[in-house]
Image: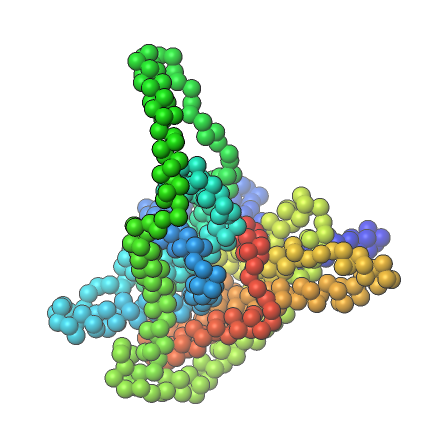
Length: 592
């Protein structure tokens, strides 16, 4: 008993509520699930052999890896120059561009998937436009294809790649590039030798986040792809829905988790190793003539060094003639990426005001009929109210538990803090479908499948991780001498926390609460597994309508959800929460 009291009074004891929820809903179930996949206590590989022996399963597995690699590669190719241009912009323009990237990031991925259904469908925007111009005689097969899957997944994952890159690039000292230029390096050489190596941690974080998220994608491939474009998450969800063979389902989930673990272990290597910049020594087998040529070249370089110095001094304050073209190209690239990120949402908003019986762009008549259909249909409003109730409960629970955990982690030893942080952040670093399967297995043993409490606990294990990340970033800039000053004036620990600590970290706490609410309100994969077809949240209602029928009411619902990120950003601004560079770097590093 005394040991428990001491543990409760120590900083590490503040993490016990978060760890308890995590272990009950995710930790112990995934351990039992792992043992189940090996048919414990017999311990055999029969389930894994059965999965890999079926050609269809092997094809889906390889297809999942292929799609994830392609999407991740394209996100790097687009996201790196975009992040570089955002970093190079002026402070005011940089903030505007970041907000425009964050808005689609906070928008429901189900809404963004629906936007591409509207654009790529047989009666969608592109086909309607081409048919109207007389360029085609029949609709093109744009949707239910691999290309549609790539378009939708890249659209969702691109902000996840850009934000960690911007966070790291903003921390790079720009004087290093100027120093390289002053030593005679050309712009590309300075970028390649100085800026690129320093930005590799951001590339690594983006690669890990995007690839792991892509491995667990379920909604977007199922909505935009055809039967030949199924991902392993779709296969796992079908196994859960069609049978109760948890051993085979567990084997499928851990094969997916194993792929993610291999990639994380590979990308987790230190990419910022300092390497020698000097040339390797010449081999003795080379001819003496080559040695003489190098000596002559070095002598000529020494003679030309004063000329190069004068030329550099002459060009230092001279406007570059080609910089204008690079500026135009950069502006065009930024506009193109922003169009790709924001236009689908804009299309959905405009089409939601259509007065016809079907969605069309541009609308022939304007009407609010689909908004009235949403607010007048009890099935829609009931699902929305259920989502709000669950999200509020998740936000309250996660904010209290996550703030206590972050406060305790901030005051523990670095090694202990790193280990416990890794455990707490596991639910947001594992593929979503694996977390959902583990939560389903845990709640099944607790008898909470198909209950609101089960959904709240399932959402909370991920929401707590977001709160811990955000509050920890706020505590990183907290001056602990203020607490010491309060205690020196005989203030107790609780009074010090209420009067000194909490007011100073309140912006981070509010930001964590809002992100926890968003995480819960937008969740559909894990909810579909643990709801037991008894509870319908708004995302589940939307997903069912997207799969079964294209109800134009979904456009009105999607439009309302698109405006939610604007409300979150306004709320964060009013409460004084700022996504500082330190907060962004802690978030990306912790998530990866």
